[in-house]
Length: 112
Image (cartoon, rainbow, N blue to C red):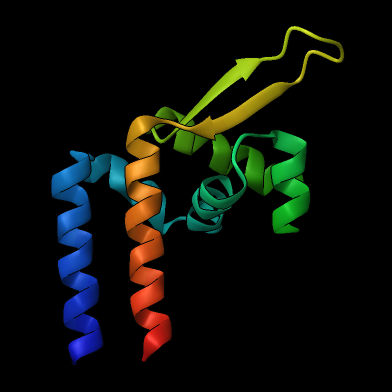
């Protein structure tokens, strides 16, 4: 019961602090979305290919997820100025806040 209350309180706090609209928050329920956010939180900016390899899931699934996270404002992309002109993905300001709160929830759940 205590674990559930902590999780709910943390998620409510997450949405209030990050000002993430509830419709946009739905992306967090999708497969591997949280993994992507936590990976970028701990390891920093990565190419899409590096993300796919690190998580170990098929590229089509993660292409869609990264696009959804970007569209929700949690990720930002920029094109590198050097060949092969790949795109790097990083957390946005809001994405970093969300990832920090998700990491805190994960830490709470691991303690029990």
